[in-house]
Figure 1 (cartoon, rainbow, N blue to C red):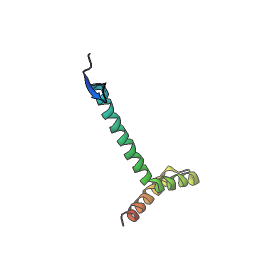
Figure 2: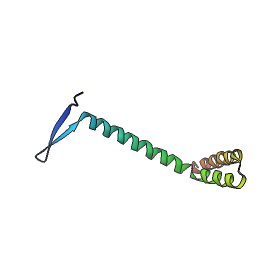
Figure 3: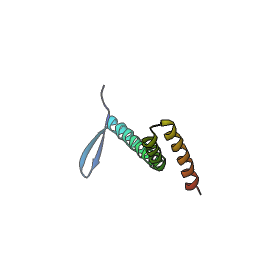
Figure 4: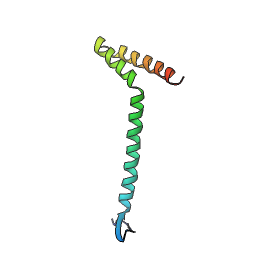
Length: 82
């Protein structure tokens, strides 16, 4: 398989960029955007996560931790959107 290349002249120098490198750059930008979006979402749930972890360590029950997570996330969403 032969990679097609594009030659650009930048500042008097020739810059060789293959199609694979262009696709890889686009994929990496997409993955970076996805990671940033996931981190922003997790930070939005941070109070609920902290509450669930505390409840889990206090009780040892995943059921109570899950209930605490849902309740705190719901209350946090109500407060945040007002």
